[in-house]
Image 1 (cartoon, rainbow, N blue to C red):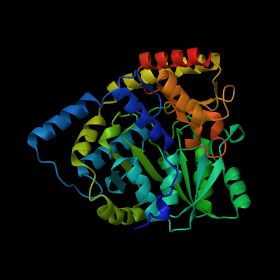
Image 2: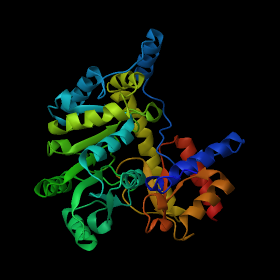
Image 3: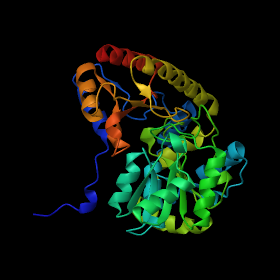
Image 4: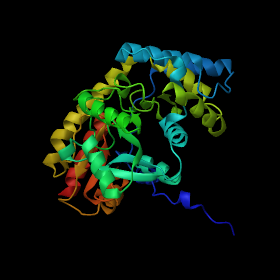
Length: 385
């Protein structure tokens, strides 16, 4: 009998497990409301849908270059000029099969097995799981109120002293999942400078750019040409299922990324690239969607503390409320399962994001419709009583 690899023994992504159970319950007729995953309730922009329809009528959907079409890369170059005032050579842009492929490509091209990479705790669980599966050492750096819920040069130094490892990479998300933290320009520059001074690769996850409600939304690309930028059309552009993202790379990293991408992915899906190119011109429509998230955010910031769920971190960006559940439980996993089984509301236990203290927290996505979010919270309020 064959064995299973040790690298596959990663923790489950509990948000996806909760989503799967919610889907099963909904299929049985239960009135489930899911706040478990960052899934926008809005469709892709109309321009993207129309471009995809036209491409399907034409029918010639096939392979593209491994790093994507020249048209999409040129459109993204213009995006950085218009939004950030930057002149980005399209040749430095790599189109990926979602941001997940971007992380795979970055980790494989930058690090060897045994290298140490820092991520924030709490933080997105797929970072930890992908790094672990690739045989990399994971240094989880506490992101607390004392550090303004982000990483700092001082917290990185302290974590290295305590662990006895020296870092090869730092991965930071701003806005962050699950905390909603927006790392301001000065703090982001301090991290970029620290990494440059210590020959550490700096990866900036900017997937929630466009969804900042408070604070400074700064691309690391504005501060240094050495940062590895990872972004996606999933969140602001409402294109989760299209599985399309991008990277902006230092010039010397383009060819290594391309070599790995050629064998892992062949190319990103052409239909999604066509739709994404059109989506870049849909800011007016997308900002209407963003306004609905802002209303959900304001509602939750006021209502959740009223029902006993205090906000555990800033809600400055992304579309999540990270809440403290210790008034009701010390086991957020069991709490989430009961909530889904008893009132058909799905949310993600904090263990996904924080293996040490996640028993105390839950993440609730407010990317759904305003009616759904209001109904979910009233169900929770009645249940908690």
